[in-house]
Image (cartoon, rainbow, N blue to C red):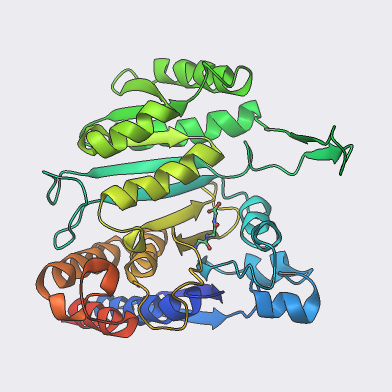
Length: 358
Ligand code: GGG
């Protein structure tokens, strides 16, 4: 009997609702070709409509509801006209990442065939690195407050949280990943000359971890020059590990250098497999283009490939990425406007699904 993977689907807000169906179309095509089953169940929470009806983003028993699935397939969250962005994010995605201890946010950056980089002199294969972002602590904290509000002395404090367990476990994951890649190179992002408590700690733990991986060449870059070097020499990076905030920024900048943020995938991984992992495009809900049918579905589809890889379906995952590349390189008429084409979310999704099934 063929294996059945159970996947919870959360389209969320905005273009999440447009790209998720294309991701599912491609996942089902891959399941058909590779002889496994995919049972998907869609949930209508984690969006502005749910918040309007219930005053919260997730139901109180969300952990029980989602905890039994093999993986979560997420679109995008955020509809600032209705819910302030920090409430959307903290009430949904960040709650799930922490509740399911998805402490690694894996965000590959590759310049694919058929995609033009805005950087001069860069072609397919020239950019190929992975951002490993710490996903449960760091600068993403709600610890802080305001005093003397509304007066001249108004004062705002916001704490960063680093734990030894939290820093070491994401560094270990990143070094293991670098050790398994051909170039065996790792860069950690820091800003220890300016942020004088948390960043030297990050440096200290990274340097200690590097000692345990003699086969990996490791170096550090301050976040400001690292951002500049992403634009000037993105080809020199292999694995880049960073805290929550720097990792988020770098994993938008990276795909922008590799053509468009619309193609960027991500995996929020619970490496211990105690809880399901969550797969979502790097991009958000994009209210400015939502409802027009022009959102690029590749980030969602590629995230689907990462989901299959995580579930042990490596051949199907590789087939999905190969199909994405083939369509991007060979079917200009179906490409979405961000890729310079006249196509739609659906035309691109359908073409990739057909290529997977071919
Ligand atoms: N699909 C990703 C999404 O909805 N992103 C919204 C966002 O702002 N995310 C920030 C983050 O990943 O921490």
